[in-house]
Length: 284
Image (cartoon, rainbow, N blue to C red; front, side, top):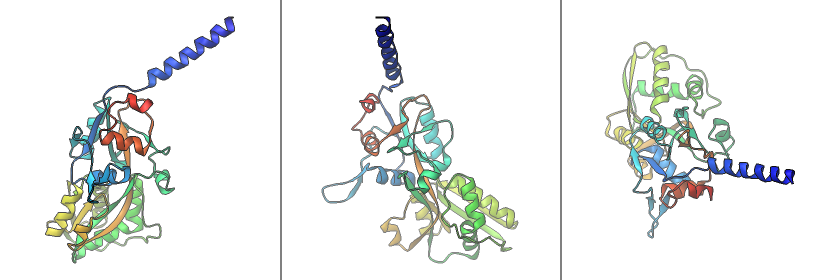
């Protein structure tokens, strides 16, 4: 009889622990702003973007979502709300928030390289028409073995394993690069490394979003625009050329106090479209 009682007590304790670890409460959906390359790639890759009756692609992000305008604000927002969920560039991820597995795979460089973690996108440099000698040399540096090493050192995925070493050009002048807030951190590191090799060059990196970066290249405001997504057909039609400089994952993030450790793509889509509104629905 004592053994039966002990077994029942153990089962009850395990059940209570499981219940205690189940997240409950209304989900706070946090999204990036329209024009963000991270948002554009995220909604496409997770199924939040859907086609309407006429076959047009529509971003179905719930109107209840809290909209943030940068990677840093996104992480601060999720870190400050136990019920929050959002998404950020993998290369920008830090321990103030927690990344969940998606479809059974972690958001890691290794998982992305293996083709397992599917929520990944390119970092693209957008140019329009001919660019100057300095802009071209900086782009050459980014794609060189030296530049690709900087990309990997900062947690992103290189795209040119056969790249050759960079030789300093001895050029001088000023260059402005602008666009995606996801690309900005690694671009600042690349600019810093390039300027260390070319002391007479000054590179300014201006943060905005992918669409602004591409449009700035089109309008001649910058020679190199930064986008954290593939170029749109409408942009290519305006003469924009895209050069992929790195690959990056998009980490789906929750608050560190949230016990949720994994979600499926279907659950993510339902959360961000407003079909799932409470964390208790995830545990069902």
